[in-house]
Length: 197
Image (cartoon, rainbow, N blue to C red; front, side, top):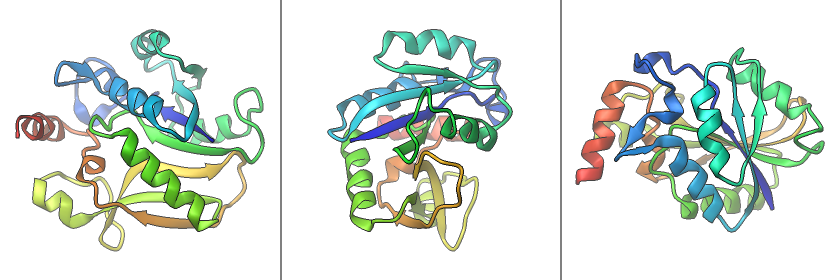
């Protein structure tokens, strides 16, 4: 079984909104709720942690209605907050497998999460980055935040709970839903159009 860690402490400055990014609604529902529900339905996830920060007090209150454990971070940045969590034995055991996932993937499903985890455990490497091919972004007119050798990271990763350098594989997923990482207002508008289709 695997622990999921939702990173929900970012300001979401690129969205240029006056409310917290995890609480941005897609189809009348906060984005983070889709992520939590998909994780709850996964056959491989047995514990869900939500990392919040001083930037996301409303999110912190909202997620209390779900069976999750809330971790308060300093909100210094994704990498810094993650490093603090991975070395904190109050939340994770040393070398425990952790799936980190961003709070802004409103179309992710339990089936996709299970597919990612099955691929991770087959590979036998301590870390895995889940990416989507760039052409899917072009097809749906989504702006990728980062492109590396034709692949775009999805915000879903697997690693062991330690701060050591870990050998990593890259899993290329063809699921377009993983491409809808909502970072800009354009992404938000495109996601609403995707729902209508």
